[in-house]
Image (cartoon, rainbow, N blue to C red; front, side, top):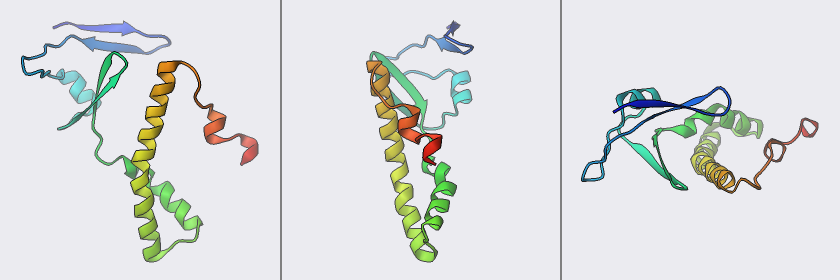
Length: 128
């Protein structure tokens, strides 16, 4: 099957490839896409409007914020076993919070209205 490059606004482009669907509703992810996107043994399947989005499942996304979580908890005065317990509690909240933010972003993108500005989320320079 042929691969097509689709120009998008700005300097980016999107690559597409037509794939077959088996009688068991199975598809094969093209090797190039599989490798470039870092797929392993699982894919996340998301319905967005009339599109189906497949993306690799990332195993431990909450670890990305470990340093920031620890720094914040230390500033709050936690140490020892109490620090460890608060760290675990806070780390468990990261993935659901990020997923909620992504879901909200998808809702805003679909409606093309509403949403939050950068200032709503991060504040302004004056507020620091």
